[in-house]
Each structure stands twice: as structure tokens, then as C-alpha cells.
Image 1 (cartoon, one colour):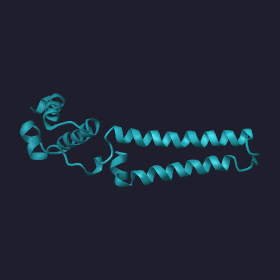
Image 2: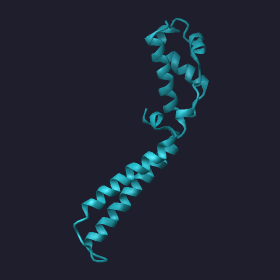
Image 3: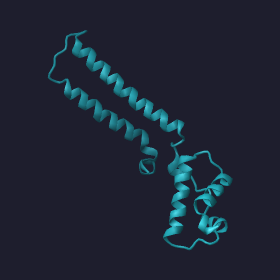
Image 4: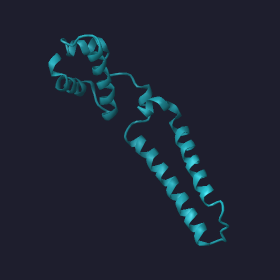
Amino acid sequence: KIMYRVGPLWRAAIVLSMVEQLKSLSDEFAFTYPIEGDVYELIQEERLKHLIQQYDTFAVALQRLGLIGIWSRKPLMDGREIKKILPNIPMGPIFREVMDEQDSWMTINPNGDKTSFITHLRTVFTDFT
């Protein structure tokens, strides 16, 4: 759900978060005056590198999982199509559940197709088939 809220600003959100953490690390070492090559300087440098690597790994994971762009994707099926697949489903809160399930399924299966989704719907909502 976070990716939907952040949308195309996901890179900016990651950078802002990283900068905040870098600032926090910087403040932690503010009262030490390292001499070049000093243990404090080496520790600070390693911690900064590690933090940046964590954020880089996170961004790569978002891309590999196919989560970049999910905020602008279209649903595989609209309400009318779902009603054809689940003809006994009443309108109301349960129908919203089915639409939410579609959203969740598409997030978990970013390359999933309509046929696979239909199979999933029939498996999850057997009472309405």
C-alpha cells in the first residue's frame, strides 16, 4: 500500500529517508575529531557505506519485484467482468473485498495474466461461482 501512496515520488522518498539517516549518523560522530586514518573515521566511513548499500539494495529489490509503477496500472478486470466470473456475488462490501483481492493479487503477481487471476478468484471466492 505504501507504493500506491508514494507513487512516482518513491525515489525522492528513499533519498529523503536516507539523508535523514545519514544526518543521524553524522550527528552521532559530531563530537569526535578524527585524525585521518583514525579508528573513529574508519568506523564512521564503514557505517555510512553500509547505510547507503542498504538503501541501494532496497531500491533494487523494489525494481526486481516489479513494484515500480504499480500505482498507475489498470485492473485486469472491471466490476462487470468480475460479475460474469462470480455470478452469485452480491453488490456491497463483499464485492469491494473481491476488488481489493484483485489489487493484492496483482501486487503479488505483477506479471500475472487475466486467466491466472480468474482461476485465483474462483478458488478464493467459491461461494459465488
